[in-house]
Length: 274
Image 1 (cartoon, rainbow, N blue to C red):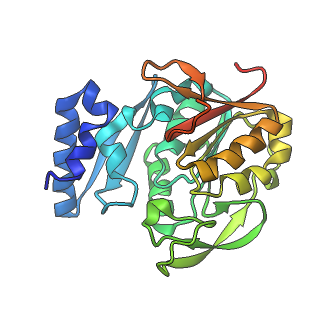
Image 2: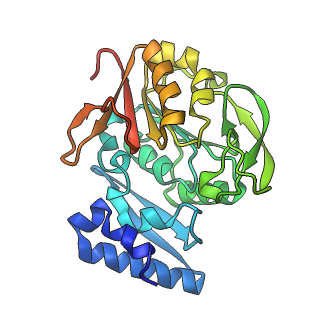
């Protein structure tokens, strides 16, 4: 039981900051999974708060990590509130069960707007339920995948739902057709923050957002999971005047190292950097 799963916990920032509670939540999640049960938790996003309800799903469904780590889940969860203010408009691309959608909605308040995109039905239902749980009326939810065109695409979930992709072929045969749309098609009046966790479709999504990027210069947050996908995104955004930054362990924003290294979140800022 301890092999693998708890080895990962010991490496998390949440374990280094609060080892007892992190381990306790890891044990609790295992119990919830055995009981096929759900849990509702209170979550922090800087000074903002929201509730999140999840069923204890199997591995690769995108629930265990946040349940265990909470505000230390990713740098975006720990420090991302610095980029959002009441009245802002944010996009959550690859929303899964709504952790960041709810975090953003809490931060931008009733005068702001969050647009969340999630193509997989099981996650979209949880996304809707979590927005309703918090009684957020500042969210627009789309059961679609972001891309560079309006239409449809095959999405491959053979490597697990949390890694489902419209650009990667895992060869496992677990594919389905999902609708696609572009950010530019939303015809927004403003755009302040864009988070993309779309498993290899980041470049296509940004191509479908060129007018919005040029008009509003939003902060763009992506995952640098591998160099092959990351470098074309970095090159494209640099041509638009953006530069990449990451948070260090103390919460300081620093330039992304030239030598590639995996990063949960890379933040791109249009010049001049705020």
